[in-house]
Figure 1 (tube, rainbow, N blue to C red):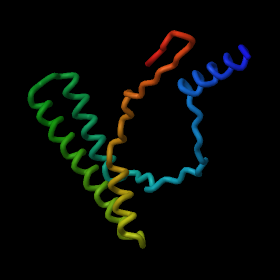
Figure 2 (cartoon, rainbow, N blue to C red):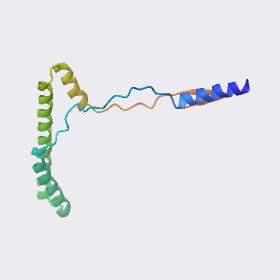
Figure 3 (tube, one colour):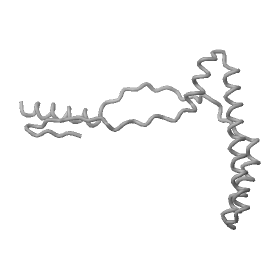
Figure 4 (cartoon, helix red, strand yellow):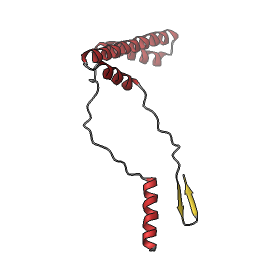
Length: 129
């Protein structure tokens, strides 16, 4: 009887701290093709050169040049991502699903809240998280 009580207490404590997760194994397929931005490579090289030049010299002119090239690079990447999203939506037969795929891929993942609290009663002692 004491053993069964110990096992049930231990099992419940283990279930609370390390819950059993059930999941299905799905093959992961990329929703979008990994687009290699060939067009942005040259702009990136110029941006990196300007960054290196500014970090070595610390001159105001180099800083302005660095900021301009960084902005050009960011805009180029945004345009390429926009084109890729448009192509994905236009090539898909289910337009609504394709739009939601684009939206969900652009969203930042939600952070899990650490507000999960639990209590465990071992004899007369309450243990809680």
